[in-house]
Picture (cartoon, rainbow, N blue to C red):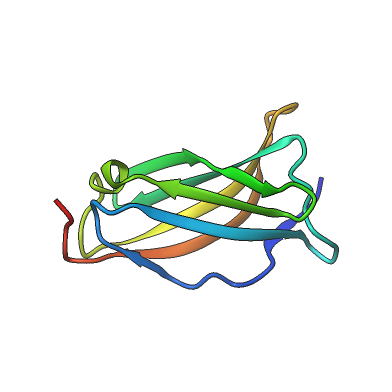
Length: 115
């Protein structure tokens, strides 16, 4: 089972509740090359306070290790404003039940809310 990490550090992400939000990322195996997404689906959990929004991402390049996850405006509208939270990225295998953790990324919601 590979240990995974982001190829490049992703700092705190900031967005307004009620706006669409997309995160592109490149995954590598620790001490190795690109993570091969074949047999895995990128997934993410965005948690702010007691509210979590889960999304299924899209593989951009399976052998290149790149993927993207997006949250809709309706999904982010459920989050508290002026609050801190976390995005947990993971690879969800199609053949087994054990997810592979990639990274936790800090988020901060703005005080502005998009109607």
